[in-house]
Image 1 (cartoon, helix red, strand yellow):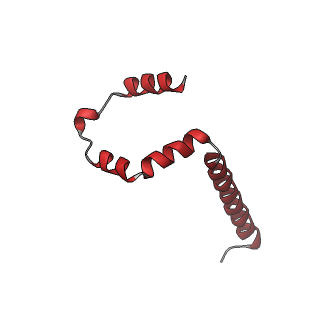
Image 2 (cartoon, rainbow, N blue to C red):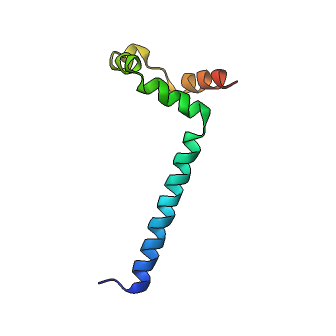
Image 3 (cartoon, one colour):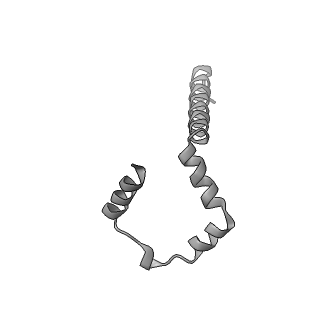
Length: 73
């Protein structure tokens, strides 16, 4: 059986983790780019396109970074 201080420390850690997760979720929900991305990937048409993707559409990491940088300007 755990001591009271161990249980209290564990409860505090869990509360901190929950608070951090809540803050991260709220931050994401208030981010317009994230909201738009969520709308796009939850669109039924987008899920069909994702399902039909194949290895021809795969790009290397540096190319992906470059394209992301171009689209972020």
